[in-house]
Length: 142
Image (cartoon, rainbow, N blue to C red; front, side, top):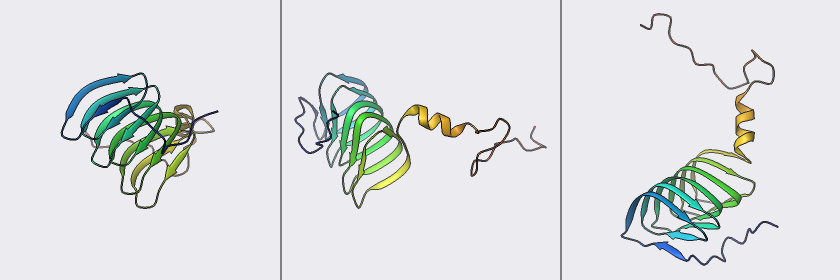
């Protein structure tokens, strides 16, 4: 059974407030980010972004508990919790999503990458999906 107890998390790795890091972090376990991070996060268990944490990254994790800011794409096997006052810009792929009141959310959410990709394809070849405009170049573009 998937863990969804977002508030009972002990992180062995911490990027503390005042620290910044660019690159890839691969953690077997959990990590808490209270500083600034940019790049890619590969977390086997839980990502926690504290109130002062600022993350601009693509994330693969078991679950995420976000109180700060995350810009990017997150793929969480078990779930994502966006706490009141947090800010998220990007796409979420997860089967469980909790959004508390007072969250800034600008993006999309799908159960899986595959379900997002199915939505992009028309059900009938040659027929556009409702609300999706086909991009074309202007006739006089040169």
